[in-house]
Length: 585
Image (cartoon, rainbow, N blue to C red; front, top):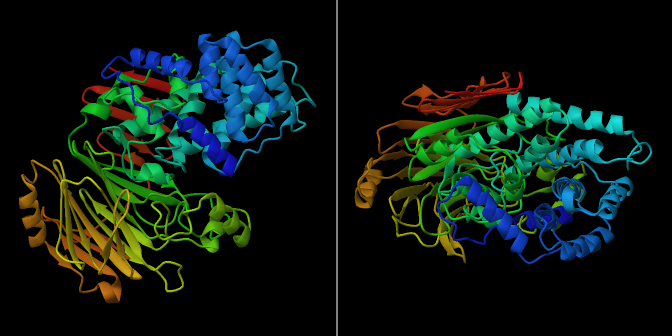
């Protein structure tokens, strides 16, 4: 993502932290609040704010002047600009002056946007392109910026979207579970559902909407999109309720006070209504359960022998969520491999660790540019990427093993790596903390009814930061054990500490074989070797590649294009292959 695209992303999120006093209301009332907010918010040269004005017919004189000035500037932003202008063109159509519609069409003729290389950029690009070919009059060859005819452009966009629907629902998503980027996919699907000319395309878009929201609802807790994320940003990884998906969750589920982000407008303007089963899962599915998913790893231009798939495990209870990937590098800059997040009144309620890998060679795996160009470009755009104290980023030298509410993380960092250390983030505002020593040993934390213990395999030091405290352990071969619990499984924090200290940690084979063994406070014997087997009670644990998702509420076999969503006596069946949505009863 280039510097400008990051700026446009900020426009999507510019109001994400402004809280309302709406409280518990109906979905329709919350949609009305979103419309009201964006039509009364100080007008700015922002396509979403202008879309709200033109859709609702509010303050049109000022909106026309603002849009006129905005369109007078040279377009920038590629897919983001395309999607933003199509959203305005379609939703603001009734009140948009013809001369401004003509100006938008003229810019589409002269501006030459690129589809980008990331999944969300391409979905935005081809969604906007498909709808432009269906709604722009008089745009025939050679009027389109790429010199192709309307029919050619429409066919190209349609083929991409149909292939993406199939790929995503049969083989897994690449940019998955992102608190910051899932809103892009939802926005594109809403616009397709509401405006595509072909009914088949509209239905497919609605299936994809329900599918993405079902995955979100299953991991939703107290405004947070819990678990690991393929794409995350520094500001929201330490504040898990400060993302676009927090605001979308507030709109859809109504369990937290409403906050605002531009993507909500497409929900507010749409006749789409999320199935009630999704709200039930988000708010009422409180029995402890595990979700296991198969995802596609990031597209590589080099090192194509890397695993095609990554597996994701998330354990949820009423009070907390522990989620992790199985390890390795899937996205060098924005990857978030594991965390424990919990319900709490404090803003920062998450603990996670990472190895801050950063090198031209790792970047070049995922970017077509040469190593030096990739490094110079990405390091300048993401200033914290090359630093050791960043909060996000993937590492090829990290492997994770999760069994329910226990996680083992092992790192085997080569001596040639830039940073031979691991860091672990603990937020300020914890109710209690306690440590055996500066390692090896246990670090304990309590927040409300959630108890967390982190075992440091190697010595460490704690460094205070504005957002929290950072555990830094400067050893190439390193590891952590994370144990989480809450009542009624463990009644008190004091009892938790006693049980954890009485549990067995075996590091005898760590220096020689990079192997950790741990008997959990619930009696399960975990055995994990870096690059080797994962065992629970001596039984090898293998991820089942036959399933895209397997849990008590979500079930999808790879290759079928079908997701079954079940809760109590209700069922939602999403069938992309046969383009059918079935609700039972």
